[in-house]
Length: 496
View (tube, rainbow, N blue to C red):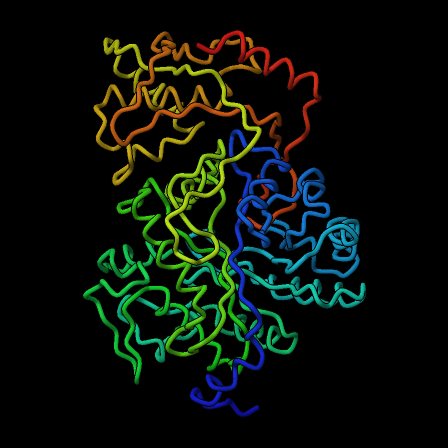
C-alpha cells in the first residue's frame, strides 16, 4: 500500500473527521468515599456534559445513566486481557455490559486495556491487547453494534517524542513498533479512533522544559521548528508527533481523540488550582475553536477531561499527582472556575447536590515526641493506608513542620476510615498519639479534609474497568435506606 504524502492527507482529512467535536469527562471511582452514581449523573447534566468515560462500571453505575442522554464509554483493564482472547468470553461481556443497557443508554467506545505499553503504569507490556481489541470489534459486529468502536488508550510514551523532538522525526517506540503498526492498521480498516492520554505537566517536567510549554497559549520561550510549523506548546507537539507516527505506519487517516488530559492540583511541582484553572481556560476554548494543529488545521478534536473528582486510592507508584486530577473535590465542590462549553467564560461549575459531609472533626498529633520511632511508624502507617501526596515536594502541604505533617497524616487516615463511623474502634488513637479536635487545623494552602458520607462501601476483586490497577479495583455496593438515615441522624446529633 502506498502512503499518502503528508500535505495530501492533511487537506483530505476533513472528509472523515469534521463532525462536531465534544468535550467529555473521565469518571473514576478509586476513592475511599465517593459520590453516589446518581449524584454524579446529575452533576454531569447540570454542567451540560454529554460524554463520559466510566472507569468502574458496576450495575448501579450503569443504571444511573438510564435515559440520561449521556453517551458512555466503558472498558476493561489490562489485568483481565487474558480472559478476552476468545470470542465467547467477549460475547458474554458485551451481553452483560452493553446489550442489557442498549435500549436505555448510548455507548460511544469500549476501551480495551489502558496504557498497555507504558513503563509508567506497568513494568510489563501487555502484548495481547491487540488480539483482545480485534475480538471485541468482531463481537460488536456479530451483535449488529458496529457503531461502537473498540480502541485502546495509549500514553504519550508509546512515542519517541521528547521535549526536543521534531514531530516529523517521531515514531512509535522501537520495542513495541510492530504491535503498534498492527494496531493502528486495524483501527484504519475499522474506522476506529486512536485514543491518546496526555499529561502536559508531566511531559514538560520530565523533559526539562519550562512549565509554560505545558499551556496552550504562546508564553513559552521554548520553540521547535519542523518543516513549515513552529511548536510552542506540549499539546500540539505530541498531537502532531502522533500524526507522523500514524503516517509512517500507513494509517494516516486514523482519527485521534484525547482520552485523558488535564492539570493536577497537588502532589507535583506546578500542580495547583491556579495553574489548573489557567490550563483549562485556554485549552478548552482552543478545542472549541476547531482550529486544529499545524499538521491538521481546522480539525475537530474530541477530548475527555481528566477527571471529574480526585481519587485518593489511585496506586501511588503511578505518581502521587495522579490522585489530584479532579476538577471537583470528592464532595462535589469545584476547585476552580472552568467553562466546559469552551466559551472561555469565568464561571464555576455547578456544585454537587445531595452530598452529606461527615462531622467537622479532625484527628491530629498531640505533639508528644518522647518516642520518635513510634511517631514515625504511625505516620508511615497512616500514609500507607490513606493519601499523603499533598506532603510531597511541590504539594500544597509540603511547607508544614514535622509535627503538622504528622497531624496531616493522622487526619488523612482518620477520614479515609470514615471517621470510624463503621467501626467500634478508636481510629484516632494512633498508639496514644492522636487527639480529636473540632477546630479546623488547615494551614495556609494546606487543607485538612473532611470526608463525605458516600452511602456506599468498597470491596476489592471485580475485573471490570479501564484502569491498569492489577485487578484491584473498587466495586461499590448499596447501603439500605435505613442505614443512610441512621448515618444522617448520627451527623445531625454529633456534628459540632
